Length: 104
Image (tube, rainbow, N blue to C red; front, side, top):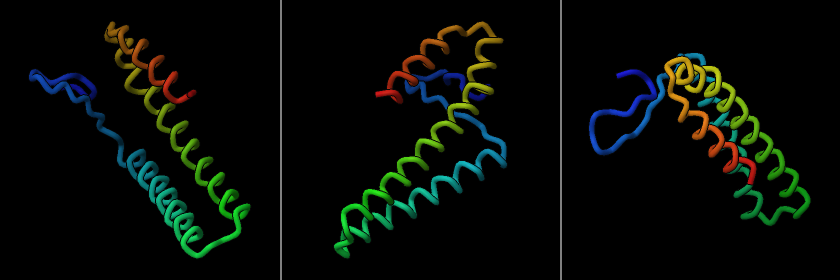
């Protein structure tokens, strides 16, 4: 079965095989974000000053936005481009729906 194609069963979960480099980059980004979130929790638990927490929260939000941009770019370059080349134009609708969700 090709990466991203639906299996011949009722579950239709799509998957993506990533290069080791892409996988490592995404996991490293998520690990840093996870650390930032734990740090925010600790700040709240320790009664840190509100503006300090907000500054750290904004940094975590920026890191998550950066993760989303990298993942979206990889998705467009690989999954979307491959599907379009194979004549699967439904991928464009899926991409548009995903972008709408991200831009709320």
